[in-house]
Length: 423
Image 1 (spheres, rainbow, N blue to C red):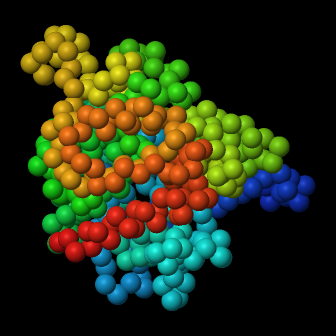
Image 2: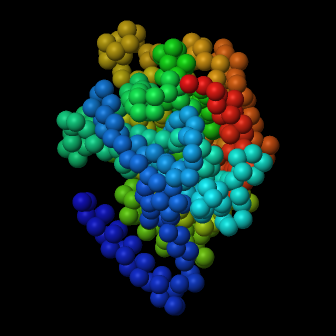
Image 3: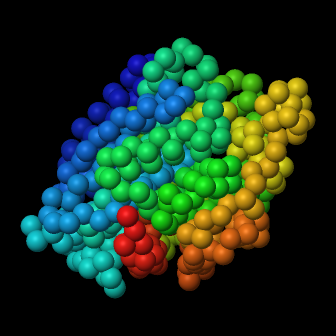
């Protein structure tokens, strides 16, 4: 374990001990979800977790969780929920405190009842599971859970970290989909993704158009392809692209440190605004739609380790304003691609009619002009082109907003219902 991680663990332990003292308890909001893993989050809501290990064709071992609803009599089709950059499968589960009762009804905050129709809860993973869908939660390579490889040691082999959007699209998604279809006996899956999870799907379907028939539907929350228009503070990291490319390795913050920040800063009533303002700079400001208690949990489960090469690839696309493959330099580009410049992902080759876009008007990372650029590049008619009718809706509102159930999850359920007959 890294020295900084050891120190962070000790500090977190000290902070927790201090929080339980009568003098400091009022200063902090210690939401138990801060420290829960995906299986623990699933169990805490009354569902049953399954864990599966899936090996990709290039040797990465992915951890995929499944939510089992113990009260449902007939399980519906499998739905894959794929997370975005810097987070994990946890991100679909901590939006709001909830519990499924003995009658099989999921309730959040003791008052919001999920009837799978008009009254819909906020945490999408549990909302879908309580409505009978077979929910699968993958974790991309190198993240908080999926750190394994059949040959490479991430602590010693730089080659482990030499992957970009192409590998997520061409290896991670197919491995998970094949496993889910084989396990469930179905021929198609629903695929709901946020941010980078949508980016990798657009890449897959553009490079292998026939893959689109497997996804009924593909619902893209905060869809990402073109990145030239982002106005997030993350844009200030773009000049680091050459450095990120030159040194393949991990980039992220250890979970104990993020938990410490969540408890001591975000959970402190006097310092909470620091965390909120930081999230606003990254995602877009929407304070009225934030549950301040959830802010602590979101921070604790963020900054998950990723590859510097993946980040370099994304930074490259910000600079070029092109949805293109990774630039390896003129000579290697010729060897890899047969041309001196990296080719664009051919979005016009996508043939699936089952793509739905959900977008916000205040999204700093999936900017309205970038999303429109994506739409203009697609030749297929969209299944849905939904603009959330709330002008402040931003990037992570799709996962943590207190109105997520009303504005997003209801419509997701309506779209999934159209494919309930699918095999």
